[in-house]
Image (cartoon, rainbow, N blue to C red; front, side, top):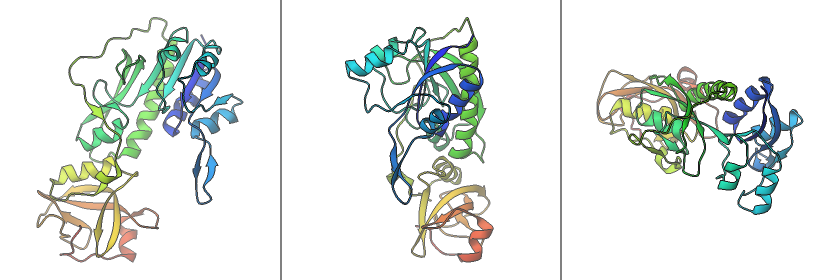
Length: 303
């Protein structure tokens, strides 16, 4: 049966689930999202993807800076929702908010909990060299991503996976699983295992600099985990370049040395070949296009 829902989310990842809930016939009583932020060249305030989608569907949107005040909590409770669906919202939900919907609050989390609780599960899974990830539908409680698990879906992480490609696959999987969870009259949510807990701390731009002394597969995982944002980077001949996609290749040499004219770079063990790059102030380019305007000779150093 269609439910009366409150939706709480902000980025594109969350908007995919909102679309799926609407397509499934659920009534969205209200959408909560982060406030509009300055963006673009003119730095005009731009609503989040969830905000924009909700407005286009005639859904009321609220953008509080906090949910801690009794007044804001009373406004939430007055929506008389069957459940709240929370996807990458960006605010902590206090206990009165968690307890207000009849069935509780359900979260789409982009990892196989309890691995990678926290802010950046997609990036951290790739950077750590995980071979598998997925989505957990969780009934929320006060702890950080500690609630019982209601649905789990799995996806492989391949050598070609980047944070962007995995983001898109997980968003679609999470949307489908959330619709299935809400349609299940006997939804059984199991406690998370006590073992295997890891935390996906927020990505710090300071960790984006590439360390070519690491093994080639670790360098590839670093590059792919930070692609496209913030983008792993290095400098060559005084120019900063972002590496957005690469592959492990044969060869070796002093770490950080270009070993051919086709963008192969020696690592601590093995080598990588850059497949997609971006110069400062330029758009992203495939390697062939990039080399037409920027040549790198063997022996050049990536710093």
